[in-house]
Image (tube, rainbow, N blue to C red):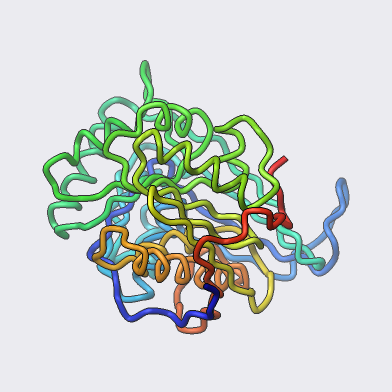
Length: 337
């Protein structure tokens, strides 16, 4: 069944996000196409406290969902963060020095070139403080969800692991959603116990299953492999092809047309926020998944039409077209090869 869906009224319970590798996002807009090796003066630019979990919290806050964003930032940028429109939801873990800067360059052709700074390591004490901040935020908000997002830093003499955070929040009554990549994602998939929601993009999913994904059916089959390993819900963001949600009992596809494509940075984070908002307090029935997928696609499409990373309003989100049990032979316009 295919039908347009308006944004739902249901909202998620409180959501805590973790961004262990916080960032300052610098976005530059160019009046000409980007040319390698050339000099060009930007026509506009913005700086904002960011990082994947912060982006999720920003979108949820815009929709009126109670949220707290635990984020590791350098001491040099705490004063800047205090001026952020998100200052009321930030729960900052301070480490010495400056915060890394992630740079997005949006040229006149609409292409986004993104350069992320390396993730600095944490001391064992800072990592312990980060986990304690997460537990404290979950308890203070009586959170329904904990979202662990982005790159995990190395810990001096060890390594930060998602499992460390999952163990820390046991007993707090939260469901855990994870949006990460690379080695951290591969390690998690090997033993995904207690992870309720996993959000790879198509390319990350292809890397996990070690084969190209060119059709909706191939993405579905790959997601089902993760469900078989114990992940309750696999939500794959597919760029212009929309979102695909797979559980052991349902496959739901949703797609919304963006009003314009201005900046793709942060769109996946807005989409994840939309999924949690649309899911509301439900645990994953087909109707709830359909609404969640629709909201995810809508918010993701809205996000790419905005010039900055953070989504500060969701009322203009376009409607999504939702398909239950989509045709598996449908080819992706953005395959993961």
